[in-house]
Image 1 (cartoon, rainbow, N blue to C red):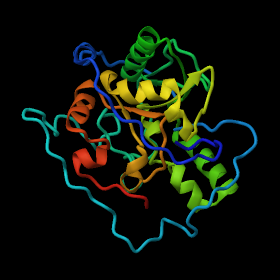
Image 2 (cartoon, one colour; image 1 turned 45 degrees about the vertical axis):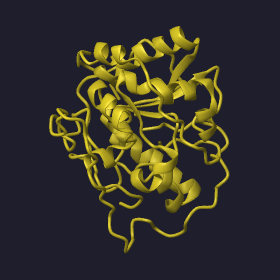
Image 3 (tube, rainbow, N blue to C red; image 1 turned 135 degrees about the horizontal axis):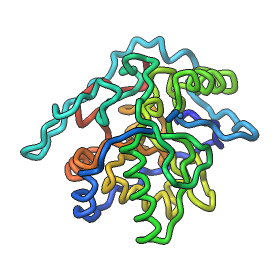
Image 4 (cartoon, rainbow, N blue to C red; image 1 turned 90 degrees about the vertical axis):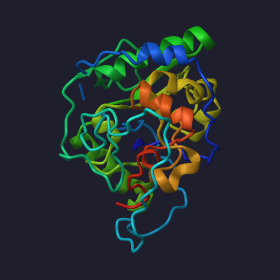
Length: 277
């Protein structure tokens, strides 16, 4: 989220399909290690035309911050096994009402995996290990090629990206698709924007209809990733549909979400979400 991209057509979220649980078991033991510095660096080129969006500053609202009720979980799954507040945790929930603490958090284990990049940006070691396995499976199972559009972005980088979006489109529009500094998943080093190779519908809703987008929507959970901003959960996540934005949460939690049919971290953990800061 947070890159300049063409005007997106609303799309129906790709349905999460079943996958081989044996892969989940294999990936559950992925080691954690070290990764370096990006939340959607925007593509260069002609800025997109400004779509019709609500006017006004969405940070000023009389509406209460939505809090969703925690969803039931399978017997034996411990929702408290990891922190959802610590930015170093793979379960951290960062959104508009839940900023990172500290806001200038920097991951300590950033690396550059051996994959194709559009913007060469690092990610955390555990994410890198899972991403390499996922890209390899997409190639082996469906003959598909992928690239990393963006990954880790620092607080300072997010300041520039957000201010650029505001300058081009106004704050009301910017707040629908670009996280404010200190609220970005990319700053955790756990989020990856993925593009098709050859490039098609990069950073656009139509990526959901590409072979790569369809395969990722059906299989990313097997490798510990979550399609973070579904089309039907904008009021919950606070951001528009982004079928290219995948958040690493670890194989056990990803399998649990898949098994229960829950598609957002806000709903699973019952924490505040919504469209306002």
